[in-house]
Image 1 (cartoon, rainbow, N blue to C red):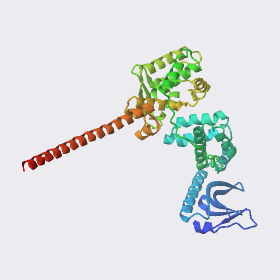
Image 2: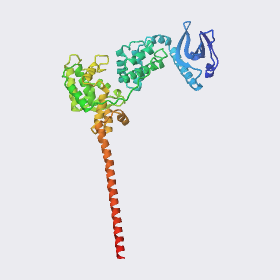
Image 3: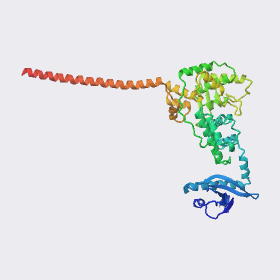
Image 4: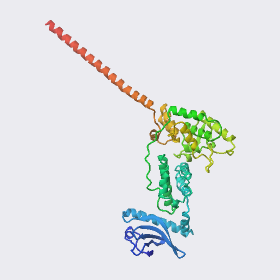
Length: 442
């Protein structure tokens, strides 16, 4: 490797003209000495920017993840060059403050997927308020439960990403969301130099085709489900916990993550309200859900069972306590799988309960604005597109009303036409009669 200094300008034209002689494997050219910015040119012509300086008589290099491709237009190359300059300047500033930027690089190699996600959550999700809780639960479900959380981020391969995706092919929607979460946290880790790798293992993983889901409970299925849930005895165990979770999800139409993280200080049984804070909401707007007598009874009975249970700590804040680090339920688990299988509803998902309430409200005459408010949507079109699935009988009745209006109009026109023809014929007959009388007189 050979280092060269240059007094030429920091321009795309100059860098495009750089090359590496055949007798060298790699060549380093200093382009901005003040911030230790170099261009690395390989024997094959590949170029990239790096931060480089001698430390204890040894040259140390940090890749800045800014590749210079000769084929790109000058305007785009200038953006890449400015980004490289900015990153080099940041490293120089840290170096001047006494930080060992190269020591940080060595530590990066030990970051796990859990640490990568925590970095992504703290520095991106929480700052922008992007469904923090949902992403936490998804990471636990899709990565932690598959023993991937402790795997080194730099050792996680494209094959590992592909295997994760294919292992979830029975639920294509969840499989695709897992890939998208993986892509996002790796992209952020690379962009912020939290991890030293430059490639994203989830890049290139083709997503499964997804059909828009419109599964809702029929009235008969809802009755069957409610009957089975009501038969579960009032004893604190996983079946009773599932019962209360499913009932509250179905009767309130709240999102799964909000029900799982419900706290007792959010519930006012006296006034019959459940107040969900903005930070828990997908829309980042607080929601107050009015509770009916049935929902209040479910919560009151649950509170009493938890207070009597020796397994639950006193003053536990969660309505649905969990044994994990989160402290609350993170997944309904096998109890839900067993219940829906026993009921012959294996294709029913938790989110379908929310859609079922919306559809039933619409089918029983609720205005779409009321349904939208109940689901806490910001856009009525979302409610119409994703949740309101009117039954065939309601559709038939609506069509018949429209048809009746058309047929009534057709009948009125027919009657009017007949009356008009009758009047015309009567007028002709009267004229003919008068003409005949005049002929006789002559």
